[in-house]
Every structure is written in C-alpha cells, then in structure tokens.
Length: 130
Image 1 (cartoon, rainbow, N blue to C red):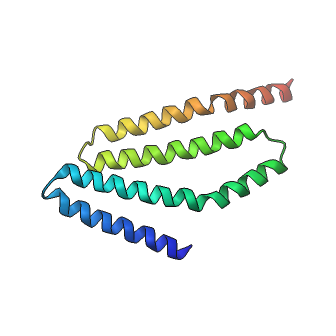
Image 2: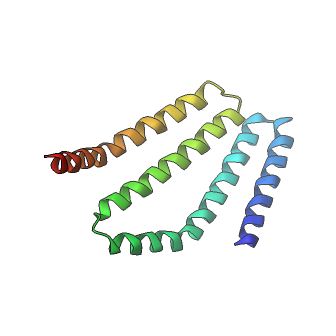
Image 3: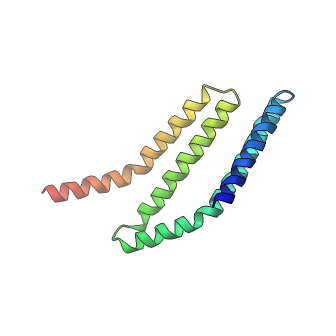
C-alpha cells in the first residue's frame, strides 16, 4: 500500500509541476492537466477500494440492516469526493466563486440522499417511544 501511495503522490507532484509550467503559456491546458491527473488517481483509488467494498458488504450482510443503506453510504462517499475535487479544480483554475457553489450542491445532494434514512430513523424512534 505504501508503494501505491508513493506512486499517487509522485503523480500528483508531477501533475502540479506540469500545471504550474503550463500556466505560464496556456492556462486552459494547465487545468486540463490537473483534471487528467485527478482522473488517473481516482481510477487507481477505485481499483484499490474494491477490497474495502467487499469487506463492507460482508459486514452489512452480518447485520439486519438493509443493503440499501450500504448503497446510500457509497453514494454519499462518492458525492463527497466528487464535490471536493470539483471545488478544488474550480479554485485552482481561479474561479473562486464557483468552488463554494460546488460545495453547496454537494451538501444539498447529501441532504436529499439522506432523507429516506432520516425518515426510517424517525419512524423507528417514534415506534420505540410509543
């Protein structure tokens, strides 16, 4: 795992240096190089995260919880990472006003995604209190 982390860190550093050099000549290409590095690292993360996903599925199978909760959890993780990356790319490209808007969209998306779980939790609490 340490080797993969070192590779990802090296890729990010090389991408940052390349983006810095490209900013002097063509700002748009610098942004695209940053996006390309992000895509490569996210692809590597997805391949490395499959054992974690399998273990989480096994843990959820041992509980009485619905598999829908696990799907909701993975969607929430995805929303968080996508929102963070999008906001960082906006900041790096000089669009300071767009970054908070991207983060706001992510927060609202998480709220909407969690509504069925909140409803189930409140139903459970109401049943216990009665």
